[in-house]
Image (cartoon, rainbow, N blue to C red; front, top):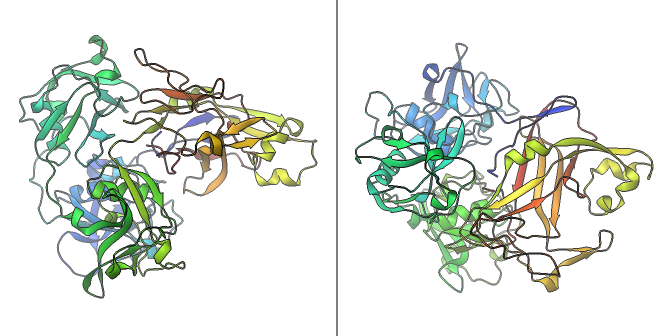
Length: 546
C-alpha cells in the first residue's frame, strides 16, 4: 500500500485513523517566506493561523509539500526545500508538523498533518523552501481532477491515475491518444507527451477505473476539462489502464550524481557533487541508514529506472580516487524526490563509520515489482482477540509479541492482538521473488516450515506525531500467487516445495487467523493511532510499499 496509513475503526478499544486534511479554508490560508534577506522565492516557511504567524516543522516535509507551498506563494514550482532551520529559527508557535502532500493540492490546507499546533518539534527543525524565480500567471486555477503518475521507471512517465470522490483510480485506454496524454503531462508540469501508452504498459492499477473514452483537443489545462465517460459503462478492466511518457525539461539533476566502480553502468558507489567550503566537489555518501527509498531516488535521477538493491557497504567496488571523502550523510528520502539533493540530510556531515567500504551504493534496473497493500481488506477484516499465552509459544519464538511478554508467567495470562488479513498486489512490471534461493531458506522448527523472507511485511502502530507504540511483522513462509485476474495464470505456488514469488498482476493473501498476522497491542492505551504497513520492495530488498 502507499507508504501512508490505513484507517481501521475499533471504537470499543482504540481508534486507528489516517491523518486528515486541515479544516482551515484552503483559500484563506496565508503563507510567507521569512529569514535573512536573500533571493526572492526562498526562506523559512511560515503560515498564519488564528491571527498568529508560526513555522512548519521539517518532519515529514518533502518536495511535494514544497511544490504546493511555492505554487501557493505564486511561483511556478519548487527547486528544493531545506531542513534544520537553514533560514534561521522562527519564533512563536510551530503550527504544522508531518505535513504530507500529494503535490497536486492548491493549498497546504488541503494536505494532511498532525493538526494545528500539534508538534513535538523545536525551532531548530523549521523548514524552508526554495521556489523557482518564475511567477505564476494570475487567474483561476484550472478546473479538473488531480492527476499523478505511478510505476514509471523515469521521471515523467507512468500509469495515469486521477482523484475522484476522494479515491485514486485509473483511466481506461479506449480512445486514449497523444492529445489527452499531453494534457496530463502539462498538468503535471512537464512538456508535451512523447507517447500515449495503452494496454497497461506501466502495470495494472488497483481500485476503481474512473474515466473512459477521454477526448481532449490538446489545449485543455486539466484532464478534467476534457470530455469522458464513466468507466462503469464501458466494460474496462485494469488490463486497459492508460499511461504516458512526457517530454521532461532539462533540470541538470543527472549531472549532480554518478555511480563508480560497478561491473556495469547500472551499479556502483554513489558519488554526489555538492558545495564544500564554497566549491563544488565530488564525494561519497555515508552508508549508515542508506535504504531503498534513497537508492530509488538515485536511480531515477540518473535515468536508470528503479533500485533493486541499496547497499550500505561497497568494499568490493572501487570508487573514484578523487571522491573518497564523505560529503553527504544522514540522507532520508521519501522515494518520490527527483534528486538526492532534495532529500533530508545532515547539515554538517556526520558519518561515524567513515567512507571507504561503508560508502553507499546502488544497483538499478529498468523493471521492478511494485507491492501494494489492499487497504480496504485490512479495514474489513480487522478485529481484536485476547489470546491465551499457552497458544503463543511459536509466535513468541518468532518474536511476534511485544517485549512485555518476556516477563509474563507463562502459560498463564493472555495477549491482546489486533488481527487482520493482508493482501499484497504486485502492480509493477517485474515478478517479486525472494532474493535467497531455496537452499538458503531458514527452517523454523516450532511452526515446521521454511521462511523465504524473514520479514516480508512490517506493521507499525504510530501516535499522531509519528512515535511508534507497537509493531509487528510477518515472515514469508509461503510467497505465492494466491489469485490472479482473469486471463493470467498462477505461476508461483508453495505446494510440493514449489517456487515462491508473486507474478505481475497477481496477489498473495495472508489470512487473519494465521500466527503473527497481527500487532500485539497489549500495552497500548486507547486513543487515536496511525496504522502503517510496509511491504518489502525489490528482490528481497527493503523499504515502504508504494
